Length: 194
Image 1 (cartoon, rainbow, N blue to C red):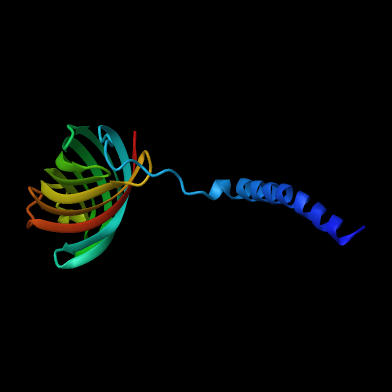
Image 2 (cartoon, rainbow, N blue to C red; image 1 turned 180 degrees about the horizontal axis):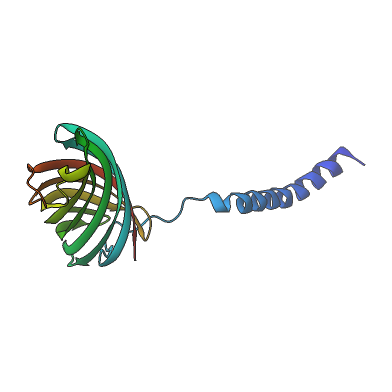
């Protein structure tokens, strides 16, 4: 077989091999392609959301503690702003006196925010209650008060958001006479929106 014939055969076969190779590579890599991005505008924040949080109580009577919990919220999207409700339960095990610790707190309130596409900047406020634990008759029981917060939430998938929130709470009105308790906490959340 002449050299010219070999060259012609290779030239004829090469495009088919190249196309087949590219098709196989494309098929293998297709699951790893970047998913379609969420639209920067037109995201609807209306509906329920459930989130898990992890964070830190930055200042509890001069001490600090890790916190973790869950929250349930409902928001109404009015276009450029949102209004909604939030319920949150948070655990902490923070000693503030010998034999006295804070165990958990709950929040129930309203929140309103500015909707900027995938981003939501909000403030919230409402009723708060804290549960304490201590030995014997020294336990003041539950205390009630209020909370205010500033938060941020962002869509990362169609129904998934991440968020950060700084919360200040003040508790009084314990079952037994006890001083007021202040709590400042920073938490980060992962939320599923229904």
